[in-house]
Image 1 (cartoon, rainbow, N blue to C red):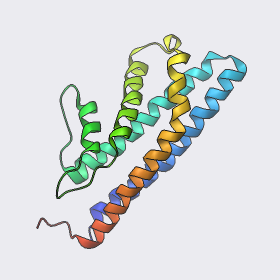
Image 2 (spheres, helix red, strand yellow; image 1 turned 60 degrees about the vertical axis):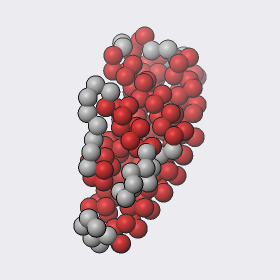
Image 3 (tube, rainbow, N blue to C red; image 1 turned 45 degrees about the horizontal axis):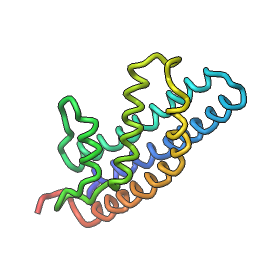
Length: 165
């Protein structure tokens, strides 16, 4: 049994639980901002959207370092990591996410970059709206795709002692 794979699966499951809470906070904050007209709720939504992608990236980094044993570096490593997660690595693992998911997540990655580099009061609700509206569907797809990857890890942990063949 490969305990490394089981430990990774456990950590990913914990992060998925946290992601569910983030998605709920995005939705609640968005609704409150619309009802109250209070821009401070938008700040919370922006921070939660930032958190959504950050947690996804944390999951991907765990996979890259633990399974792939190769985390991209360089100026565009965030984008390279997304591409890596959508790619099959022969004899190592299947794709973690689909190309469609990679493209969707890249929008959240781009928004996270904006949140990190712009004053909150300059964020555009019109640009945030599609991210908020699409988030539940994207999260559901991530749960499904990552769930399939978790099944792969658990199956591999039973069939592999971690030694290269």
